[in-house]
View 1 (cartoon, helix red, strand yellow):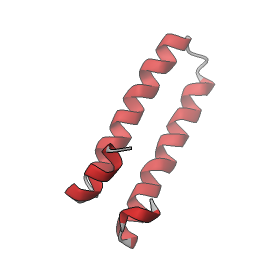
View 2 (cartoon, rainbow, N blue to C red):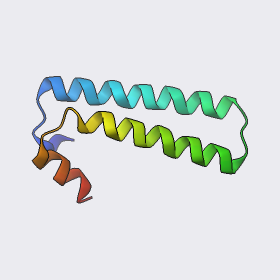
View 3 (cartoon, one colour):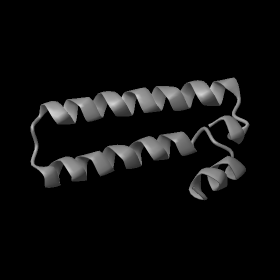
View 4 (cartoon, helix red, strand yellow):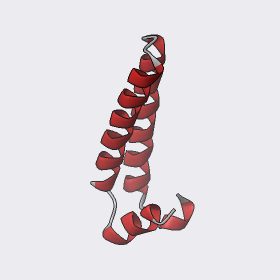
Length: 68
């Protein structure tokens, strides 16, 4: 994240989205889902988090993270 030239506001939002994601993953683990269901829901949560992150990033920042 350091090499992306994020503003403080962007960093704050991204960290919030990451905390929310981790909290939701924790809830998934507590549900004792099958491996297949867990993977599907995890993928869904990750997609939601990534979509939220894209709303606060500039186009060049999005290109940078997609190149990883």
